[in-house]
Amino acid sequence: GIAQTGTGKTASFVLPMLTLLEKGRARARMPRTLIIEPTRELAAQVEESFTRYGKDQKINVALLIGGMSFGDQDKKIDRGADVLIATPGRLLDHFERGKLLLTGVEILVIDEADRMLDMGFIPDIERICKQLPFTRQTLFFSATMPPEITRLTEQFLQNPVRVEVAKQASAALTVTQRLVASGGKEWDKRDTLRRVLREEDELTNAIIFCNRKRDVATLFRSLEKHGFSAGALHGDMDQRSRTAMLQGFRDNQIQLLVASDVAARGLDIPKVSHVFNFDVPIHAEDYVHRIGRTGRAGRSGKAFTLVTKSDRKYLDAIEKMIGTSIEWHGPTVAELPADTEEDERPKRRSSRSKAAGEPRSKPAGEKPERRNRRAKAEPRPEAEAIEPVEPMETVADMAVMERAEAGELDVPVSEMSDLPVATNENTARPAAPSYARGGNGSGRSRGKRGSEGSGGNSRQRSDDGQQQVGFGDDIPAFMLIETGT
Image 1 (cartoon, helix red, strand yellow):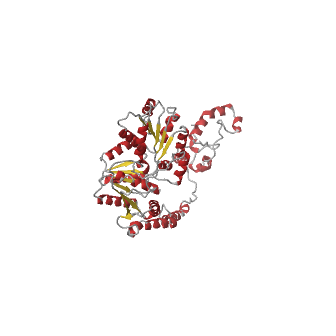
Image 2: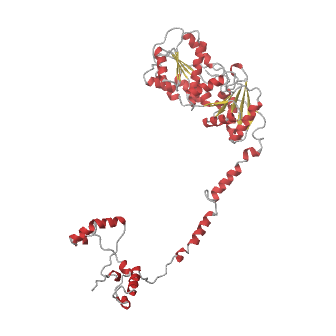
Image 3: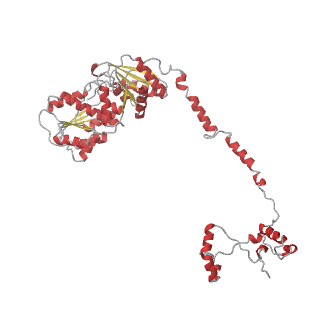
């Protein structure tokens, strides 16, 4: 089945299934019908449709999506499910745990097949189809029918009947489409969006689409900062937060819902007056799905797309796909002032020239200053040159001379010069060889007394890092003691 968004594809398979399910009863762990949806929100939305359309029928509906308890879902499966609505990942989780049998499925519905392809669910769909009986009836729904989807229909369907409600990938006629020129910088786009939001008097609620999840969070904070009633919806949010956010938007507690494609794909939210494409979608098919959130079920709606100069190729692809050109709201991108798009380029050139001709981290004048400081420090070795100094008398020699002059010694002062004096050479004489453990072999030829006397003390001296200097054969004069003879 090929149809535009908002034309009632969900009701087209829910109502006939309700009629078929009036007869018979489901068995435990063996659902009678299986509906596969690409996102949690779509699966929950289909469950609401069964609840609303089949309120007078006793039909058990089980919903298997991520972010919910396995235990609660197992209980619903054990009771027996007439309708099993699931996302591919959670369905395979239950099947691999042995909690689910798919051999009793009579009808298989693959909804939003083009989104399944974009999200990479086709291998999972192939695994699921291998577990289903060959005699099942398969329904295949998509808003667009690219060649990849056509090949999938040949793989999953047997002698299919093609039902095409409208031209492929065409926008609903109830949606008024406009393009809004904007500068390329993010804050320019946010300012342009706020201006358009304030200009629209008929705006009751709106969905704003971004290409990336991080842009969803950034735009949401910006709108809140400027006083708008806004909420965010993207794939990284947990299921409880996503459900609460959607319910708040449906109950008009939130006026603006900033969302990504994955989170908002296929959502049926009544009376959405406007859709804004903050980013031009990269894939042209996504444009049809985005603007299909407004103008549903015959209502009128408006869709605005912010366009920069770099978005031209994506815009051409969209206009080629829908077969018509989209009107501009205000000036075109070519009519924008040059400053709006070019004011950042001189900064980029200056940074490039700076990176090419100058060091990044330091100004050009610092390195010569370092060289100058080094040059000034070069004469330092000359200033530190030490002139030879004549030998000076030691403190001990001066003390002996004073005692000799005072008459305390028997040696005349005139003969003091002939006495042996401890010179610097003697004080600088190397220490005796160490006899500690690990010394050379000459120490072992010494007597026992010498080895014992130097054992512990030499180890302590080596630990302190100090060497004691002996007098050798020369004894200083001040150590000569009067004998009294």
